[in-house]
Image (cartoon, rainbow, N blue to C red; front, side, top):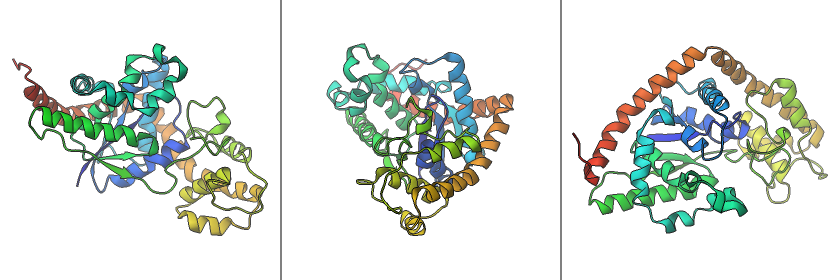
Length: 330
């Protein structure tokens, strides 16, 4: 049994891509691994956040985790800023990370764009903080999608560099956990782009707090094509492939079986089937989430207890690192 660490940013409503691409797989991992699931609010502030909304979104993320099936008695659910190790270890590891390694990170280039001179240090150093998130718990496995593989490789490089620098084996090299079907859910408006909270159009995504009528409206307005029948072809039919992938995931089928089931349907008929499948799957999660959000005291208690559990794991590891670096303990 390994130790798994993963998390999402509390920046707006979590959506179908967050759920199908990550959270539903985390639920299954609870029976196989020791799991820590973090709400990464330190990462969130690499771009400006409204403080009131950040607190609301942090509670919402915790509610989504539990509503989806993450059990706080089996897994540790906590928010990153409540565990000081993340920031402390992030600085120590940053002092062992060459700039050349960070300059190769493509995500910074994409997010900073043409205005990289105005980008904040936190956005540039984001991958080092991510490494601290992982290494600070000596996590052995990290669930990753395509967009995070490079950052996990950097975390492995940083772990190796620290171990060599201090002639030690403080950090294990974390391994990626590659997830199953529908790990990369795409925009409902453009099947070549990942579903995102930052997309200007709310019709590009299905939020986990959307009601049934909103889900149905978004699916019916999802981009389609003029090809007869449904087929899974991500290159030539990205929108059809995306919707089929979603349908397969929420009906617990593999993509081949789902495609065969829907092959003779036109887009209109298929979308009605997808509406029904999505509503049946997401409605119970949404209702559990709303019930949890109505009990803010319980959510805060859960996050406080989760942070205490996370601290119990993290502090001895951080102290080990401080001893290796040469910091004085008094």
